[in-house]
Image (cartoon, rainbow, N blue to C red; front, side, top):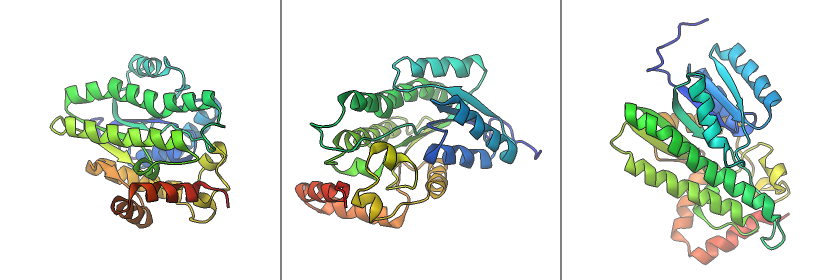
Length: 267
């Protein structure tokens, strides 16, 4: 086993939504840089499988804590679990989230309320719980996974786009509030990425995923980790997405919304 650095040099990273997709790749990326990791998601079996791979390959400790972040009590229970196990979280990565496609008047309200709990409420609650100890010791990193969806309205995925707009705005605001505390906040804003997100959200047949192409989750994670460690406030992986966001800022809002609908429509 390679020589491990001190906890001060390599803080433990807690990653939500860590059993698959971008979350799993972010956990691997942190582990590859010598961080112990806390893996959080709903399915314990998937988390344990991920933990086994990470510990075997990167020689770090991977702690598994199952949690359903649509449950309002889950953030407090998660914080209590890390405290009980003596885990001092120095990096918080709020990655858990999901989407739902379709016309707003036809989509499942219960599912959308769950989405708001996971994408917005749990993220906010966990940030509140873990940021305070970081500020107290004047050291820490927070990454909130938003999306390029955060930069415009999203017809046919209206609630999802709105949740990601919240994540971006919230992250930039608290990054400014904490600018002199030793704690940085980064909003990671990936575009379409090759995970099971599209299938779960029922948007795998849209122009966004069928025509425009998808980034690799490990590339997104690598870019996000670097941006977080540099203390960048907003990180957009990939030149194409950066260019798209910049061009949207110059276009009329109604046109941006209409184009957003176009890419969300089925081919």
